[in-house]
Length: 90
Image 1 (spheres, helix red, strand yellow):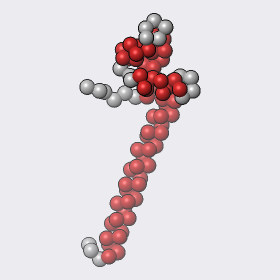
Image 2: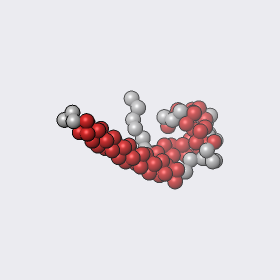
Image 3: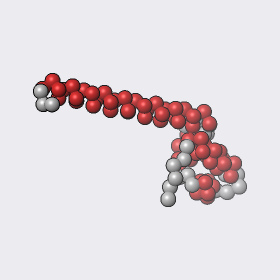
Image 4: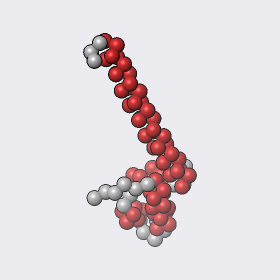
């Protein structure tokens, strides 16, 4: 069963894979930490390797996204309520 991991944990695991690649093939090292090879290669392509700053930025962006989604939902609900009240269907 998959567990939800924080971006900082994924960054640490990808660094562990970087350390292990000298000793074992990438596929084996990636499989050992539970990350897909696609995730590993995408992180390497994105600027030379994973950093904890990127993990923190991702966490911040996810929190902001969640906040904005809640705000949009509240505003949409208010708009629908006002539209229904304006038509007299209350």
